[in-house]
Image 1 (cartoon, rainbow, N blue to C red):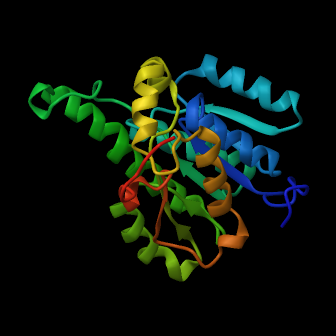
Image 2: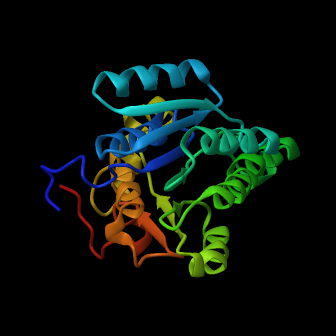
Length: 240
């Protein structure tokens, strides 16, 4: 597939992106819309979703916005029911919603409520989304969640042709890192073997591939998108 055929990869597919109002989620939504999918943008911030819809539709994208709070089971169930009623199918889902907790700090500085908040969004939220997505999804679905849920669910639903994978991003220039300032960004970049911070587009490209039929033999895996950090630090590494 060449890059001058952007609308053939996901044409006719329905794709759900949670946490789609900004950052990585917005980039993934843009990439899938450009690839021809009808993208369902889901997040809590309806005003930010409306801006994303305006941006994507102005460039010809097929987009629908639906509010969801991934920590609320009824909200997640309502979202997937709405998708079923409107489209009758779900071909791909990217469970990108993340947050909760607090700014990075030593373990002892975390309040219990901060920990509970992080777990509610980042783990329980993925579980709830996967639970109701799998009920709706057909044979071409791809899901992204935390690695443990990914592997368990991939085995549970492989016989039905449902593929479930996860993306593990490294340092990505999202709102929080952007707000940390240039010095912090340069420090983070210096720890990445490829010598730069990743962009939301880097993650979006990986998400597109996992949602696309060319990855049809890939399931139960965690795709690391981190500029080589997981591999380690190059020996005698000198940054020019």
